[in-house]
Length: 118
Image (cartoon, rainbow, N blue to C red; front, side, top):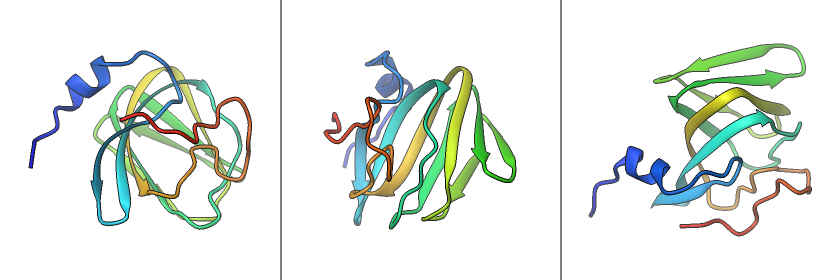
């Protein structure tokens, strides 16, 4: 059992929208990711997602409302709910989601990261 230092993990990469696995528990991964700009509207058919903001401010858009997350706040997005993350400035996020989760959900495009880095 090794502790994980989030600041260290975030310092190891600079690209956006490319999650890194930093841990695993049961059938889920703990991932870190840097976000900036608009992502893509998508949903996850079979997986819930947890977004925990470590640094910065993140907007999660839904078709009928928006939710702002500041550092220290998290949001669980239930499976099947269409959403789009938006980050005006760089945001550091921890994701906790099933190992089967693909970042772009039901959408395949240039932002899809099927092979996750460790």
